[in-house]
Image 1 (cartoon, helix red, strand yellow):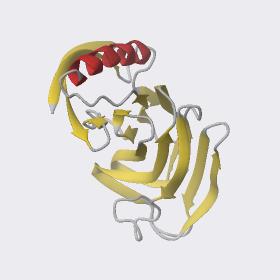
Image 2: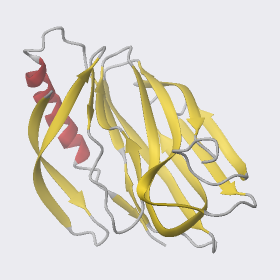
Image 3: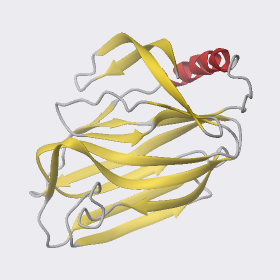
Length: 225
């Protein structure tokens, strides 16, 4: 494991930005797979985010990401519509699993019974859309913790940076009102596998600079109603 210090810019609900300096800890996993720890999640409202945040993989590696909802405090969730996009020229979709309902998936979301309105993957365009709602069961909440909505597995097929973007994010409570929440996307960086761990930190430093340049265009989004 090694650490790198970078400047990280965040934007909150009031659109004022703040800059902080923090150390990023990376762990090396088999077949050269590096991940960052989960992001610091806001506590003022729910957060829809992609986990892991900004992973590094090598060509040929499989990567499983999860779209999660954090901190359903004082909110009774009734349903949601979520869209995800990626670059199919860098990541090849292989499979996904909805973790619905929580009665079947303890770390999942929504109470049984539920109604699946849409569950569609377009591998050519690199998009996924899911619309799910409670169908007679009690509304769902999980204060101060994560609820996984779905897991998706990709295979890295080319070098580059792939933006995993939450393109649609509608949360609805038991009164049919929209739920305000933060959104955090993720970038997947596919770089060559290097056999020498001596040069790996240098390569990762250069790659992180490229990622930071890319992420200057991306910050924590807020969905308001």
